[in-house]
Image (cartoon, rainbow, N blue to C red; front, side, top):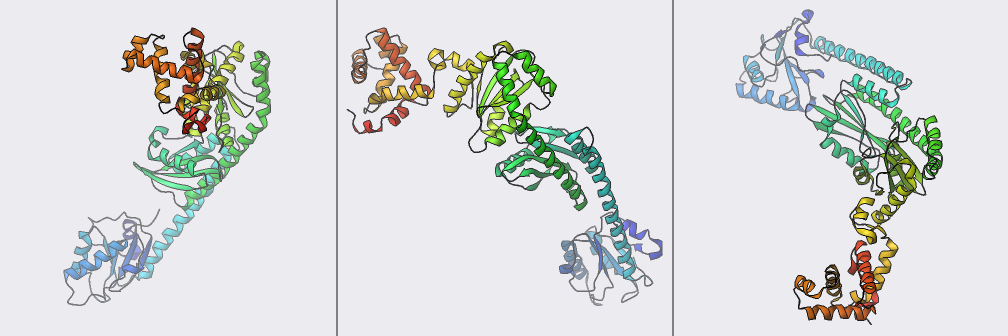
Length: 520
């Protein structure tokens, strides 16, 4: 324990006397210093006890002089005073005691027979003993962490022991922003500024540490992994900031965690070819063969109905995103992940994975199938493939489900980037006209009203003859007869395909920019 005034005055051989028992005496002392300077405040540190003989105060010193002197010291961090009686004054000046008591600072009278060095030596011995205690604690804590590391509990056990040693909680945030391990205190208590700081450290992508002050504690954050290859962020919540000894223990745990995470990543990479082959067996209908392979290495395949999700990782950080998704399957019987042709295939029980959160955290584009039996995975994979094609071309939806495509009808389900480009190219001569967008909007409304002129004209606020003229203009420009079902169906399909790809007008202008100056 660090020295305090309360412990100091209990040292009978020193013969010290506390002059105002109502003041704070349990404040930890960082050092004991002596000075008779008029202003020693530049030479003291925080939590210092200052000893003086009072030679700086003349016989005519007033209460204001003592108030100013004590005020400067308190402002510099002095938490206790000692007055050497019998040197220049027979007793401690009452004005000094009153000035200190007004600020809650204890004053100790040091008798003539007790040298200041004896008081300083006692404090130094206490500080040295505290340092030795912290060193012994560091060794015990590191030993406990090492024992946990070689046990069967793995990284979770190491983090649990670290939380116990620090009398706090430890949370490992993975690159998918999920909580990987938690000890002592619920993870929900760390949501808010801590989560925001974790996200900032991930975005920065460099080795770093920081602290966040929270209610009744401090959270110390430390990244794990190499620069531009972060594997996680370790969050340690304690009642107060970590001292040097605690940081030494934390540093050893960071090293263990980095080695463990890198080993896990290497294991995942080494298993990718095996999982790709298992995926091929599943799609080919060889479910039992696939199960026998995965069962032998402790990987699960959901037993009931499943969904297939195909994810396209972002170009800027494909490895990190892929590894984050692969870690989802670790130790879970309801999730299987394989890397297939540069895309991530996820086979999971319905609702087992929050795909929207995963896409948001890593910039993924994901296509999701309907719920299917394991015996019909080929069809589900085809649905996910089509949904992924829409998701990768959409500026708004990161996760597209087959159900949403089916709700849009056959044209939406058959949509592809190539279909959108073909439709936009076909419609480009109309879009290039000064009123091209309006013409196509009139045609869409007319088709939505089954080619009935009067209802469509009323919806558009036009006379039916004006609407007829607009449709005839489109018919002429496209060379597409619209007086029969076939022509009208083709125009409807063109409008649907071009619109699903991000807007008829924009795509058509990109397809034929030369038409924008007047057209043919």
